[in-house]
Image (tube, rainbow, N blue to C red; front, side, top):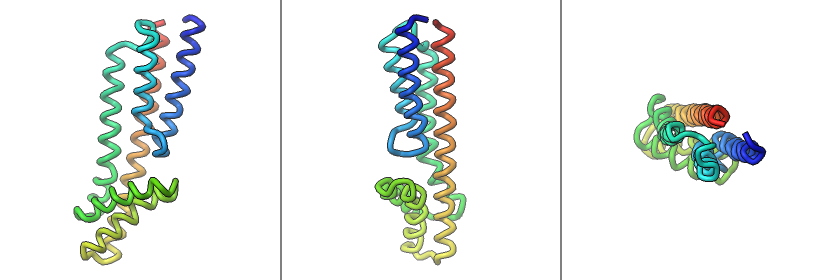
Length: 164
């Protein structure tokens, strides 16, 4: 491995680390940033970079991560008894919560699902249960994204090192 390749791998892994942090906080797009770093490394280093097979696996993992993240909040709310009103509220609350940093990110889906359930005619107890489900789903989505980011980073680094 040349000095240029070591520096390139190090810089790529730093960008991927930012993606890993982004999987926990929605300020940065987590898995898409990890994928973008891998593609950028491949474009710059060509054959000395990650293989096409691993790149395809990274694309698939990115798509799975995005789908899982989207569905986790909805399914969490549904599992705890939310109607379509509560699931819609969880999504709306999650989007609005992005503007209020970490407390908003956690409380947004809960407040949204609860509020929309109450607007749909549910009593507070049942509505708040849907809110808890939306929050649990959100947290499971974060764990899933983080795990997928770690797997992507390990696959990338291992493949690049083994190919050098």
